[in-house]
Length: 349
Image (cartoon, rainbow, N blue to C red; front, side):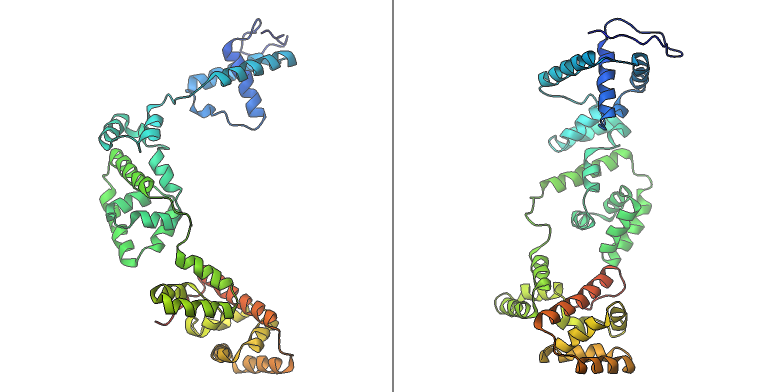
């Protein structure tokens, strides 16, 4: 294949003519990939090859359409002929196979590779992709020192999120264990990552991201009050332990009096439209009188009297209007809980 070189020389580089070399053809393909927004992984090349690529591209300048088509056809044919590609980097091969090799072999090769085995290695990369709940499950039962190493390998924000999920006494012990990790070797860190990665890989995949309690709780939170009560009563009769855990996951309008602190109720109401509050209170059934009294008793007498007056003046809301208004109040409470503005009390029993 040939191309017509430009007559304009590149400063500092000798002119190029004649058939394109394989290296020049590779430069053409890389230019095409980069122009199309692809990442051909040039950062993984040795520095001298990266510099050579820059020089080759600068020499080419212009390629006619026919030559470009021939280069693409040749490149495509070579891709089709490749059956399998192996990384040249031993560290990358080790990261690929570490879950399949014996721990003795992995340990020995990790020692040989030293720090080269650590950057971007498989186990720690996979571990860092877990969410906080998954990380907490992983470190349950691990020593405080191992947990300190794991937290050290995470971004500070991820580590802080994980610490907040731990019981206070465990978090304190792990924080103290950081002092014991000052002299830990890179090899030891790699071995811990391999062990934790294998533990994660050995766990059977689950079909659902949350447990049964949370899934039932999510459904009941979205259900109407009548359906919610019927299901909870049925669970109570057949599976009382499971029902108790589900009640903890469920929070609805009728739970407000039991699980909201009176001092938090005014903050909840301030974020809601007054008509929503009036509709929910006006449509509350007789068995929710305790909730209505709790809400009105948590605010000033003047505001409570105003709500009572508006309730008396309006027509009774439909069940649909009542459910919608109650859902808005519950959603506000849930949002404030997620934002850390209030804490729900545990359900009685």
